[in-house]
Image 1 (cartoon, rainbow, N blue to C red):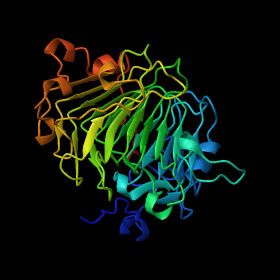
Image 2: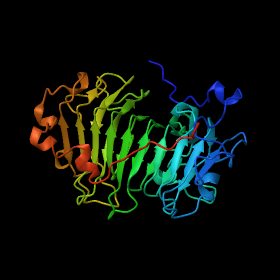
Image 3: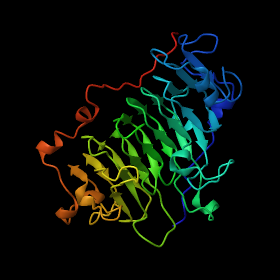
Image 4: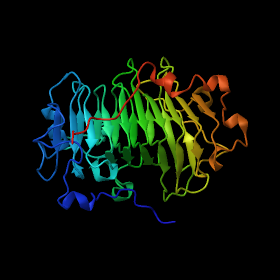
Length: 362
C-alpha cells in the first residue's frame, strides 16, 4: 500500500479570483465591531500574518478580540499568550481547508540558538489563553520522518491548547506523531476544551495531554505507516492528573482511516516525567471504530511499571468492526450508571461552549 499524502496546502481558487476575502465577516473599513482585526497574506487586511494580528491585540481585553483570517496558507508559528483572553480565530470562508496555519518543526529539530525544540516547542500554534475559539481553521505540522532520518525525536505538534474554556468547531488538526496536544498551563490547573465537528489525523499518540477535552462528533483518522511492526500507533495518550475527575471524552465520533486491519491501538496511558502520579482517563462512547483498531488489545502499557488497567479507561455502546469485544477483560465497558458520569456535561461543568461568531450586518 502506498503512503497517502495527508496535507493539501493549497487555498481555494476563489481566494485568488477577486472574491471578497473576508466573506460575511465585514471588512477593514466596515468591521464587525471595534475588536475585529483582519488577516490576509495578500495585504488586503490589517495584518499579513496571524502572529502579527495576535500581537496587535491588547492583553486582558474584556470580551476578547476576533481575528478574521482570509483564505491562504500562513506558514508561521503562532503563540497566543495567557493575556489574550477570549481571542478567536475565524476562517473567513467557512471551510477549514481554505485557511491553513502550518509549520514544520519536530521535537528533535535544531533551534537556531542551540538545543532542540522538544515536543511542546515543536507546536505550530500554542494557545495559553483562556476562552480561545477556533472556527473553520486548519492547524498543521507538515514535518515528515522520511525527510529527516537523522532526527529520532519525531513528535511534531500541530496545536498545543492549554487554556480553560477553549472551543474549536469545524477545525482540522493535521500531523503525524503528537498532532493535538490537549494540555493545561500547569499541573494544578484543569483546562476544559471542547472540539465539535473537528477532524484530527495522525499516527502515534496523536491526541494526547492532561487536559479535560471533549470530542463531540469529530473524525479521528489513523494514517497509514510504512513500518514492519504493530501497533503502527495509538489514537489517544491521555496524561490526566490524579486530582482531575475528568480526562478525555470522545462521544459520537468516527475513528477510522486507511491503516491496516488491527494495526492501531485505541489508547495507552501516558505518565510524563513531570507527573509520575498521573492517572490517565479516557472514555470513548457511542463512537464508530474502524477495523484498524485492534479489538483484542486496544489498550497497551506505555510507561515502565504502569499498566493500562490502572488508568481510567472505559467504553460505552461503541460500534463498528473495531468495537468488537472478543476479550472483555481487555475492553472495560461502562455500565449505564457509570456512563452517566462520563458525559460532555460532567466534563465541562458550568461552561456551555459556543463557537458562533457575529457576522456583518447586510
